[in-house]
Image (cartoon, rainbow, N blue to C red; front, side, top):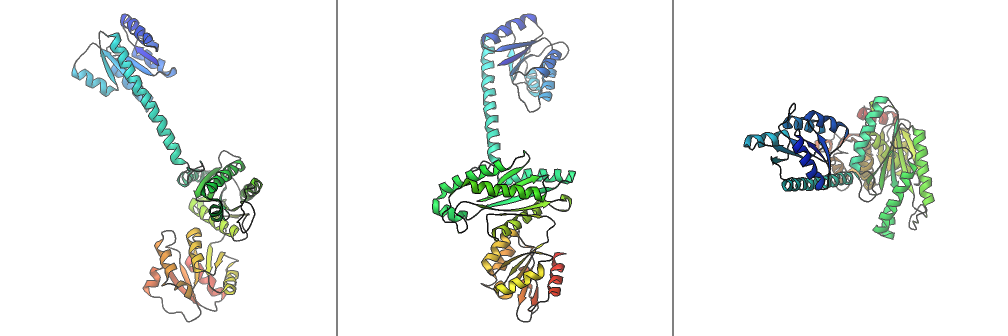
Length: 426
C-alpha cells in the first residue's frame, strides 16, 4: 500500500516512516496539513496516518477537508495523538478518522493497525467490485447479455430527451424471430437458447454506431433504438439484419415459411418527438411488426410516426371485413381478423386506437373478449364499436363498463363509419 504519513515532529516522522517501510509498504511524508492536502491533489494514496496536534491545520481539520474532497471514495485514516481523553476520540471519529494511536507509538501496534485497516480496505474493494458486477447483471438479459427491457427503456428515454432537445429524428425497430415456438418444440430449449444467442450477435454486428441500442424485449422479441436515423436509414438497418440472419443459415426444418431461421422486423421513425412519446413510438413499431408478420414474414417494414391511428376490424365474414378495411384505409391503419381469439391477441400486442367488432363476436362466451380487454390496463381504454346486422338497441350500462362506445347497423356507409371513428379518436 501507499501510505501518507502526516507528522510535524521530525523524530516521530523518521521512526514511523521506518515502521511503515518495515511492514512492506511505501511511505509518503507531509509535515503539515496544508502540505498533505497539496500532495493528495496529485498523488493517490491507500491510507493516511495523521498527527492530530500540528501547527496551522490540525489533524481533525485536515481530515474533514480530505473527506469533503474525496466524497464517496473512502481512504482509512489513523490519528496519532498524545491526548487520551474520551472527547478527543469522539471528535476524531466525527472528523472522519477510523482508528487511534497514542504516542509514543509502538512499532508492533502500528503495523497491526495498518494490517487491520488494510483488510477492511480490501473487503471494501471486493464489495465495490461485487456491487459493480451486480449492477451490470441487473441491466443485462441473463441469456443474451444485451440490455433487458427495463434498462433498454431507461436508456432509450435518455436518447428520446436528447432527440427532443436537438429536434433530431429517431427510429425504433421491433424484431420477432419467425416461428420460434416451433423451433423450440422441435429442437429443444437448449438449442433455442443457443439460437437466440447467435441471433443476438448477428444483430449487434449490424448496428454500427455506439449510440444504437439493442435490448431483449421478451421471449423471442428484440428492440432496437436508432438515434438520428430517418425512415430510410432505419429500413436499411432492418434489411441488413434480414440478410445477415439468412446468411447465418440456422436450420429450421419445421418452419412453414422458410427452411432456415428468419426474422420479421417492424419499424417506425419519429421526425418530431415533441408531439409524441417513446411509448407511442414503440406502439407504432409493434403495429408495423404485426403488418410485416402478416404479409409473409422474413421481411422489414418501416413507417413514419405520422402514420394514421390503427383500427382493428373483427368480423366473422371475411368479405365484409375487407369492405370495412377498404373504407378506412385512406385515413387509418387497419388490422383485420375473423377470430375472437386473434382479435384479443392483436389488442394485447398492438393496442389499436378503436375496435370495430361484430356484435355476435363480442357476445361470444358471455362477452369474454370484452371483459379481458377491460381488465387489462393497456387495453381498458380502447373504445369498441359494435357492428350489428339488426337494429341497434340502447346500450346498457354494463356494455359501457366493457368499453363499448356505440353500435353501427349494417350496411354501414363510409361517411357514417368515418364520422363515428373520428368522434372516438379526436
